[in-house]
Length: 253
Length: 227
Image (cartoon, rainbow over all chains, first blue to last red):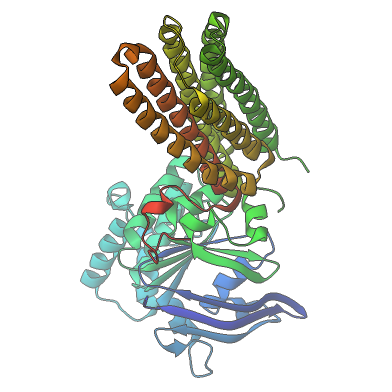
């Protein structure tokens, strides 16, 4: 039986009266990349934001059900969402380095927030994270320059390095390459193959070919429901559900 | 709503249908060449082969273009993959038809073989298999495709019978070895055409259902690949 790192059970999410997710059940195994696909407004982004309790930060938004990370439900009242976000990192569609911080300070921002101040540790983590994010060679001589001085692709990898610095077992990515050129996109896709050796990646994408290239498993969402979840190679060649077939062949959406 | 890929897929299908029409004509003429002792039919087969070869190149180019520009998935992807393979099968079947017409060239240099009834029966079944395989492809008819797979066994049995009977006859009348040898070669080429027709039928089933039925008789019951 496959080991489960993250188990989502009966997850429902609302924005006020509007139900954005309906009774989602899904499990994620360690060291895998899962692509989340579906038309705009189907609930993909809401879903990933429920996995690190970011969804509830929107006024009027709430979720019910269980998200069990390493055996513990992250929606229990005793759980501090900030601590969850250290275990479940997130990279957004548009690169969002802290504008007032240097490259170095961007990477170690999470550690500093956690109270780690020793320079040698911060330096070691920054170098390791930037190497993991395949950015070290490009920025090692400009660590004190503003993070926003980097190119768009570099800024996105800086945000990945920032997320990796706190060593989360899970990394959520919400369309991380949609604003990038093909070369920067290819670098991030290569990076994913490396990252999954040590962590689990859950990535929202609108690019079917990208999902097919980079993921082990794919989940198809439609109108807030999880329609199909399975091996990527199967889902893109012989989907089980007619709606999946229609969506991935461009017959709707 | 028509998707942009639909235009390309429809054109691809039309190209393959035309190519299949050439093939059916080639197989028919190759059969008539030895059956009716017609040299004119031999010429016709060679002329058709040129058209099939050109269509082979055109269909491959169209598939490549669709794969590169449309990046198809699911049924679209399976369809294009099947067209690539069916294209190759049709081209090979046309080659077999040419081989039969070449066998006929030598066969016609001698008096007719004493009994062609099994070979005639075999050629009729093979032509039916080709027609049904192509129809199954055009109509996306999995039932018809399965009928092709089932009917191929009879072709194999007839080929074995022709081989056995010709060998027995040649032991008694070795002076007819030229005729007998060409009857065996024609039977073998017909059987190969039948095999290619079954390949097409298998691809039709794959396109429609995603189920890979190739080599299914080699698969052990209960294996992960068994559908």
